[in-house]
View (cartoon, helix red, strand yellow):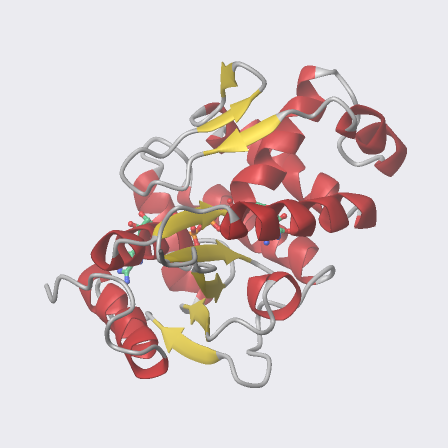
Length: 234
Ligand SMILES: Nc1ncnc2c1ncn2[C@@H]1O[C@H](COP(=O)(O)OP(=O)(O)OP(=O)(O)O)[C@@H](O)[C@H]1O
Ligand SMILES: Nc1ccn([C@@H]2O[C@H](COP(=O)(O)O)[C@@H](O)[C@H]2O)c(=O)n1
């Protein structure tokens, strides 16, 4: 009988719109790994605080509702969902009102501590050979000892243009302002704009989506033994 092994953790950080979610999800598919969207947990908590009509910028109000925050998330990159209690919030947590509020809840130290513990336990319980975990502090706080750590970047104007292309009907300038405002708020709490020692930078400014996925897979292939995962070679 073989002992169950701890899943390999691939840590991916980066600023808003750098491609963390889309690229990490595709990398996970290609390797047969799980995919953990840590931003979804902070977004779901912001949604939960708003559902209580509480103030997301007030730490005491956030902590008041943290006690009954019943969060669950799928690690299957092909069946992605996020729930709070019985409510599916997969789409709701992407609404601008949640995006605008999320940095407020993410700056509360007790929230970050609880989130870090949750992320580590989700990875440990995953039924896959590895998990691609993406966020802002994965390479530095959640999994500083991960065998693969990547900072995924792209020039600010390119990230804003990609986000704007997703949000048809929204003013491009306002979308860019919101994205840069969120980066400024978030980077005052954790540094995801510069690579920590040992973290590999993948700059996708001049890469298309497929090239970016391949660049991350190359970093993983260089760091992990070849039998890890089921890289389909596409
Ligand atoms: N290399 C690339 N070339 C072109 N478009 C890309 C590339 N990488 C990602 N994209 C697109 O950019 C957009 C933003 O990507 P994504 O949502 O994955 O970013 P993110 O870093 O997870 O953002 P956020 O932190 O705001 O959730 C998506 O439409 C995605 O398809
Ligand atoms: N490790 C993380 C991940 C996310 N955050 C906060 O959540 C927000 C939403 O993240 P997305 O990746 O879904 O855009 C983000 O703006 C941060 O406030 C975090 O603090 N740490």
